[in-house]
Image 1 (cartoon, rainbow, N blue to C red):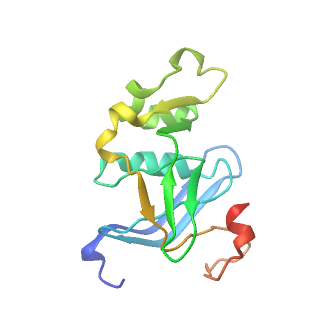
Image 2: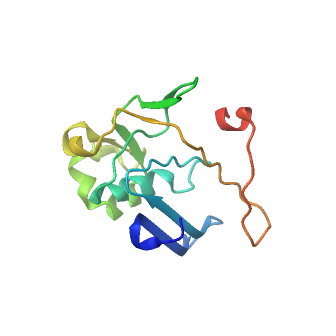
Length: 157
């Protein structure tokens, strides 16, 4: 898409890095059309859950966190299995719209927050959606991002 005026989400040159640690995220350009679905896949701690849950304040829907089921075939679909998400306590602080949905507030000193979205975010929960593409970000030493095909085994890993 070349006209960002019609995109539901248009991000350019987004950079994020924790004050301490090695995690660094850079998105040179990302656009999601109105009505389109997107999946974020990546290693633990890469910001997937935080990013998606932050979008719940917009008109975007939510399908799942950590585990989804995929129906393969001519018209593949992905299905959300649980209406929950797990967040580090500092991420809960950044997402105040989810504080009431945390089921274990007294144990955040020793475990991730478990957020049940079924009640607080019912209007944003999706049951399923068609699979149009799966994006697998990979950190490399390259400055310029490249796009290429991934093997089926890389998707299921």
